Length: 381
Ligand SMILES: [Zn+2]
Image 1: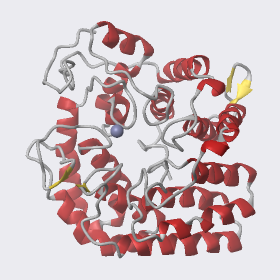
Image 2 (image 1 turned 60 degrees about the vertical axis):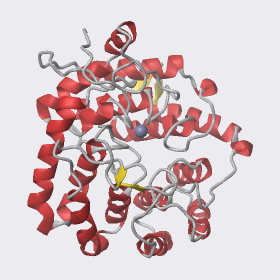
Image 3 (image 1 turned 90 degrees about the vertical axis):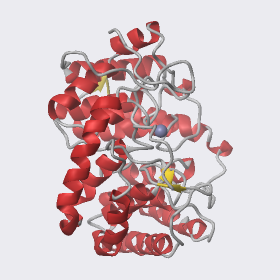
Image 4 (image 1 turned 135 degrees about the horizontal axis):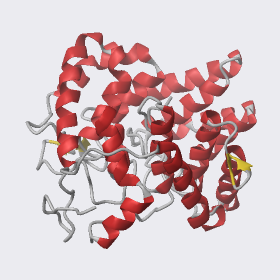
């Protein structure tokens, strides 16, 4: 693949390359297997450094295998089912449990290891006592200074609570406990002063910002949608003429087109909450269409393909042939070519669900099974 530089970035690698090749498509099942094979051979459980919750590290890889086991109950890798692989990566996280500080007001989202471990254990072992332990952490998130966003804050805690709620639908007592907890967390987010801020800045995007918070609230309890309609409407109005979204407010330079900052995260979020905002439907559709033009033009990033800030995530914000075409840039072969061309900024967490191979595998599974284009750990449930 020849990669023509298209825009200057701070490093000497351009931020993205021109999307001017003929449309392509790869065999998604074959690519999924190749990706999983690289994952377990290059990053076997004992070699994945601890930390990172569902975002990066061993638990993030375990969560991928947990999800794949549901989609491919009969699939094996080196003769072991996906559930066995999941358990092996969980074990690597547990071995290092003493190093985890546990949730704090500044770190109580999907990246917290203790909370993620409890959630994953609760659903796999179907253990009600563990659900209680997870719900007890609500106390930490009640702190006035607690973060609200998804990665380090209350919105991420809502995702974990939703995960366990799904496994205890038949248990009224446990469901009530979870719902009391989500009510409390949502009340706290809603009564926080606006704009919601993270590290002093009013972020817009899915990972640290307002669209991520709104999405987690509505997917947890759709009753809140009418109360969030005006805020979502205001957020839509910040779309740049280019179709992209600003990283934070007031809007600065139009630079990043990736899930964590910019249009891709906004598109994916809007698609999963659209049905709860009937009076914004037409506006949302226009915003999504315009965003996709921008992602199509500027979305072939030189960062190593991943969900959070790379081509796999940008692909999931597209549909049809555009999705298939972006996915062709996330194969082992293409990534090698990007490296040879000097067009690859390597990941710091190459195994991770959100920053590396595990996330690439997730996107291939979505392609293979024709699943709704969702992000595992964000809006898949
Ligand atoms: Zn990112």
